[in-house]
Amino acid sequence: MLKLNHKIYRVWMFVVALIATISYRIIVILNHYSDLWVNIAWYTGTIGFVWYFAHRYRVENKRDKLIEDLHLAKKIQNKEDLSEEDRDALTYILGGLKTSLAKWNYISIFSISFIALIYALYLDLF
Image (tube, rainbow, N blue to C red; front, side, top):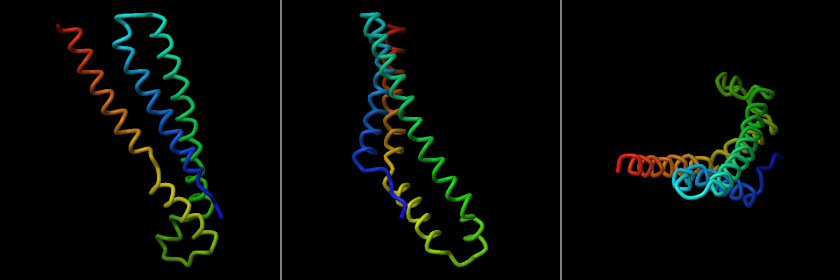
């Protein structure tokens, strides 16, 4: 039976992405205070995003490989019987989609980026 990454690891990856997002966006503020803190924020954000997107690539690649190797889309479209292996793979894929925190990362990235944009415009215009 295929297993999802442990819930603690998935939450950890959410936190890593959140910290990376905040680190990049806070540079707008830090530019007015300290080059050292700008560098720390940039490296923190960059390392966090490298780690997070490597994780996301691995997850998506595993799902794609299962779908392709087992011809799942074709079997479903042709209404073929599914083997136990097919069912396990679909359970894994759907379970991962259901419990993924990626959408919350997207919401966080959008929200924090929007706030950073408004703040940057405020600093530049006033």
